[in-house]
Image 1 (cartoon, rainbow, N blue to C red):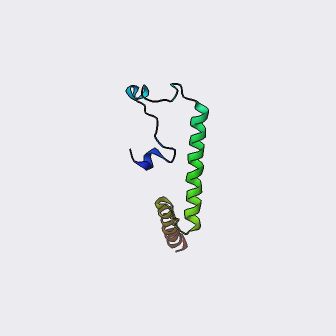
Image 2: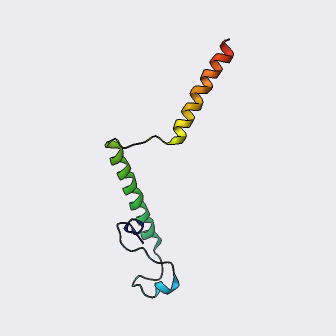
Image 3: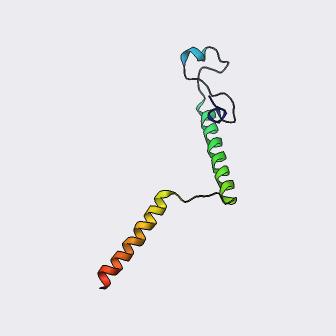
Length: 84
């Protein structure tokens, strides 16, 4: 497992029964803790994206560029067909 896959929190809990006996974690999952960890990861992703955008590293998604191109070409064709 890579460091990126494990995240900043360390080792990810294993989902295999054989590994579960070797861990010191409780067998039951606390859904509140799991949800909190998900929220923290989501907030960190948002903060990182905002920081990238402030540095000028933002990009426009391809589907937005394609939609703008279709809209411009469609408007141009409509102007030619209906104005003439």
